[in-house]
Image (tube, rainbow, N blue to C red):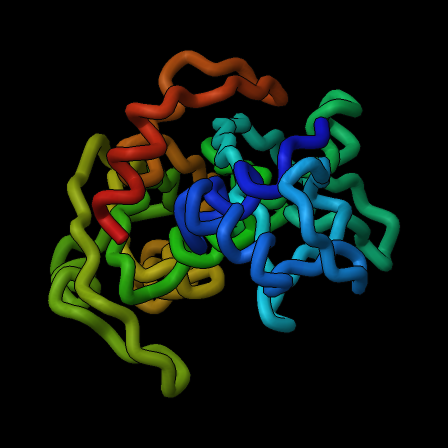
Length: 232
């Protein structure tokens, strides 16, 4: 939907609407390479708007979704090996969303999806320290070895931050990590003599999987988005 150029500039956060109108009157604003001299001009995100040659980026109305990822699906838009991807499981209207981090082929549970690529990037930065909680089903539990993971461990030259690990039952662990390195839960638990048979993510920061069914998606409210933004 197209909007007035001054509002577009104001919504981008570059300047107020009045200041934008002043810039237009002074010949500082161009649309698709053509300088405009009137605020009676309508644009959308497909147009190239510039102020003194510098692009004005449209502010995205950030949307965030929780998806319960099924087992044996790739977190990617296309798999060269032809395996099923998360986008094969999503309704058509959600297939343009970006995933926030990845869950590996066999890992199930909460995967966040968003229309905002920059938001997705920030959420997955190790410096964000956003906790992710998993339920890991393991072959056996070595309580002494798990203390190594709780203190922080190095495996094959890669250092992993301390993990919070709670024993749920004789073969189930609740694992909380805040770094997001590739396959970190599986790698660390295997190094501790507790190889993972099943891995299921139940939360990502303020977002809980709850009773969302496998393969289903739900939109999260602005309060939840704000709670995540506060942690960045």
